[in-house]
Length: 172
Image 1 (cartoon, one colour):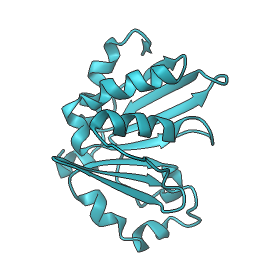
Image 2 (cartoon, helix red, strand yellow):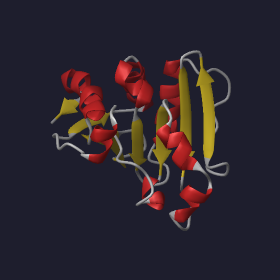
Image 3 (cartoon, rainbow, N blue to C red):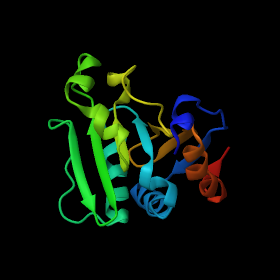
C-alpha cells in the first residue's frame, strides 16, 4: 500500500454478508486470512457491544496462526502479536475519551509500520487514525446471526473484498 493510496481514498461498492452463526464468522475469517493483502491492511471494526468484533478478530488471528490465548485489548488498548513474517496489532479504543489519547500513546509509529492493524471502536480516535483499508460493520440480527457490511477505501481494501464477492452469503 503506497502512501498515495492512504491519502487518496477510492470509492468502491460495499459488500454485505449474512453470517448465520459463529461458524460462519469462523469460515469468513479463515477465508480472509488466506488473502495476501491482509498482511499490511488496516481494518476498522464497527458494531455495538456484543456484536462480535472481538470474536471475529479471535477467529482471524487463529486462522493466521496465532496460538495461545487471544485477549480483548479493552483495558490494555492494544495487544500485539508477532508471527514469523507478520506483525499484528489488535486495538480497542472503547475507553478513549479524547482522540488525542491515540497520539499520546504513540500509535502513529505502529500505524506507519508494516503489519496488520485491527481496530475496534475507531470512532473514538476519529481524526487521528489513517484511512482504513476496510470499514467492517457488524449488526446483530438475533442471538446468533449477523449482517456484515464491508466497505473498501483503498486499493488494498478492494483487493481484500474482491475474493469475498464470490462467497454464497455475499450480496452487493
